[in-house]
Image (tube, rainbow, N blue to C red; front, side):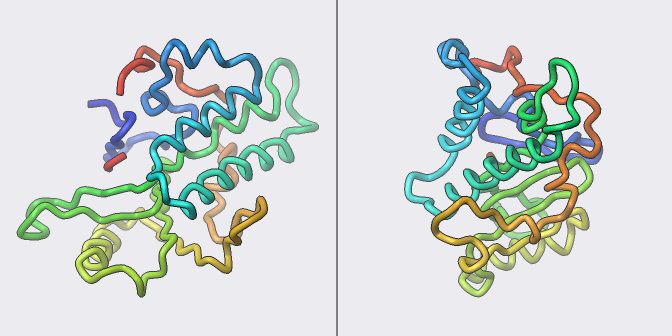
Length: 211
């Protein structure tokens, strides 16, 4: 099984970071490729592919993902607008941003509990060195069993950092994104990338996110 697919991600020591440019997650079909007539259309198609992985009524989750993408694109443009030579454009760097894995359910080891157990996060990012979990609901609202699973994961996965994003830090309207809450590794996603790549258009295109 590849590390990244349309509905799964597998993280083990040494797994490279999951970026928007990573292959395996998009599930682009041949008909999708015919719609890509510009850089803006490719960006919108990537957004649409991510939105198909979200529950219909998950308004805050959808807002988070959309604003994360918009912020990553804006940051790439601000960083490279006057620096990128040749055929590479500032928008090309956007696809190096880390891929948000929405509604992540992380399988816990069978020996940890007497039954199959999953720790749930609103969003998970994997940078290759750090896992960044996002909680859009306050910890106090998480039911007991779910909190126990999450506490177990936090205690046993040192690479995991959990960021709580409250409603007042993430307004209902506008294009604001709470960049300051997140580690630099997430927001300065281009730091360890020498040449940007576009979304992975591989032989996985026509194939079909638990971690």
